[in-house]
Structures are given as structure tokens and as C-alpha cells.
Length: 454
Image (cartoon, rainbow, N blue to C red; front, side):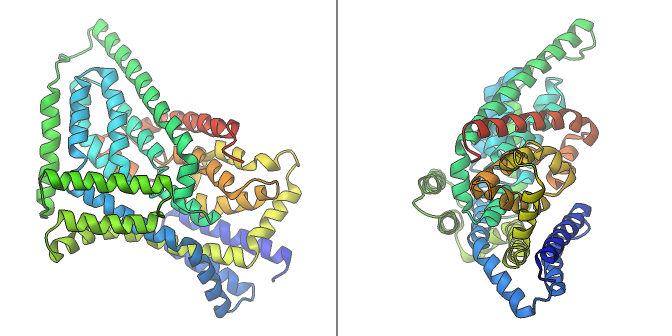
């Protein structure tokens, strides 16, 4: 079954079966991404020794990504633990002064800061409980709050320690940091767009509230004690820390060292002085020494964040088997050649752009793992025959899809956000989905017109 047709058919079976299992969500992604390609390779006549070689080949391409994920998640988790971002968020809450447009733009700024660790759950836990009292006091819609936070977090998911870049980097054999540097201009555009969208939503909300006042339906007043809300946020963070029962060093010098270490890591990543994996490894060890006194407290800090770190690392390691089998057997190449032969000549060079434009709807139909580990390899193999680089293909799919991260019912973090805000998925999607898709299409077209997707 190792003929061209046989490899094409088996490759498609492996991909569609894996996607189907991932979409159903009945098992951890590690299971189908390991067992399905192994079974496919065995059916094609490959032995266990060859499958081991396939895995070793795939492992070489993802190992740096795995190490980066583990230590980046732990590093930013420690900074969240010690409250490094609390003063920033508290200051932003105060800065809004109860002005509706300032509140929506401040919401975007707070979410951008909160998502520096790349965790959607952490972002929603930090932002929604802190800002919901402000929205309630001003009679603003909780759906506007969730939409702005989700959009801001999605834009920040382009960071190299976020899930999309790690997955894409493993597929196209590129360092996530290199992809991030390539995407930085469009991420900058996206941040500006988020602030503009937040301002527009704030203006719309202000007009809605004005109509309510004019109709006499508005109850209460608009006097809001922003200082009290900011202090309540800080108190809640302290209470959460107390509930976890861990201690850490405090003081100005500790804060300064944490800030300096974080900035040095960002400088190293942007300048290329050091790859992300060793940079975050060094940063994590320094953070452990600076913030925690003894081995016991340092071990507790690692244990707190190990589940998140290892969950992501496990998926990437399973991807080594999935990608190793598809690449080393030649299945992906045969699928790509088949696509090239059946696609109209004028469509081929723009296939990655077309898929990018539909990235947000695809996120509703597939899981993140299915999108990057199944769709991207086929698209990359196809457009490469037209001279499009792996970086260009990955960029198109990332930009198109990442904005939809938190409009998908497959996102557990989104369900957490809805629960925290007491909101309904259907009502949220009516606002969030068209906004996210339009936002995504604009970004993809800007990236295409500026030559970023070549």
C-alpha cells in the first residue's frame, strides 16, 4: 500500500479520522494524534522500527517548541502568582474614571496585559471579575466586556508561547520566535485595531445608554467609585493568593528584578540573541530564586503550573508522531501533489490566503489541534509548489484563525468567561462571531497586500 495512490488515501484517512476524533472531544488530543498515525503506518506495511524512526524525526522538529512551552508557561505563571501585573491592571481601572469609552478601551488594554502568559483561562479570571462590577455600575453590557477581552486575548495569542505559533512552528519546521518576529508588524496593526474596535463599541454603548435615559428606562445613576472597584480587584487577588496557601518574597527590589528579567527575555526574543527555550529556562530559574526562599516553595511553584505546561507539551510531543508519520512516509507530499493536479492553476498560489480568510469559521468546525496539525500541512505542501514559503503559509493560517480563538464553543476558556460573567453563548456569538471574522479578514488582507504571506 506504499504506492502514490495508497499513500494519498491513507494520509487522508489519518487526517480526517484524527480531525473527527478531535472535533468530538471525547478524548485527549494526545490519543488520536498518536494512535491513528501509528495504525495507518502499520496498515501501509511499515514496521515498528520504521515508526520509531518517524517519531524521532518528528521529535527533532518539535523539541525546542516543547521546552519553550514548558518554561514560558511556568515563568509567566510565577509572575502572575507574585502579582506583578496587579498594579498595572489596577491603574488601568482607575484611569477609566467611569467614562464609557475609556472603560471599553481600558478593558482592551487590561486584557492585552493579562494575556502575556498566553493562557485564556488566566486572562478571563483576571479581567472579568475585576471589570464586571464597573460594567454593572455603568449599566454597560456584559457581552461587550467578554467580546473586547476575547478579541484582545486572541490578538495576544500571536506571542511565541501561545498555542498557535507553537503548533504552526512544529508543522513548518520554524522556531515560534521566528514566526512571531515575522508577524510583529501585523500584531501591531491588530493591537491598534482592537483599541479602535473597543472605542467604537464604547461609543455604541454610550448611545444606547443615552437612549435609555431619554426613554426613562434607565434606572439608577452613573456615579461610579472607580477607586473602590480597583481596590476590590487588588483585594480579591490577595485573597486568591491566600487561598492557594503559598508564600513569596516581597519588596521593591523583587519587583524590579522580575520586571528586568521579563524585559531582558523579550529583548532576547526580539533581537534573536538567544532562542526562546533557553531564554525561558534561564528566566524561570531566576524567577524561582528571586521570588521563593527555599526548595520547598520553589517546588510548590513548579507544581502549580506544571499541569498547564505539561498539557501543552504533551500535545506537541504527540504531534511529533503525527507529523513524523505523515512526512516521512511521503503521505503529505502525495496529498499536496494530488491537490495541485486538481486545483485550477489560478487558485493554487492563493490557497493559503483563501483558507486564512475562512480561518474563524473553520475554528468553529475544527479544534485548534486539528486546524494546525491537519489543515496546515496540506496547505503548506500545496502552496510550496507555487513558490510560497512555509512561513508565508503558516502566517496566513495563523492570522486568519487566531482571532477566532475565543469565539469557538470548543474553547474551554470561553465557557469559563461566560460563566464568570453570567452570560449566554448564543447571545455572545451574535456579537463576537461577526466581529471576530471581519477583524480576521481585514488582517489577512493587510498581511497579503504587504507581502507578508509570500
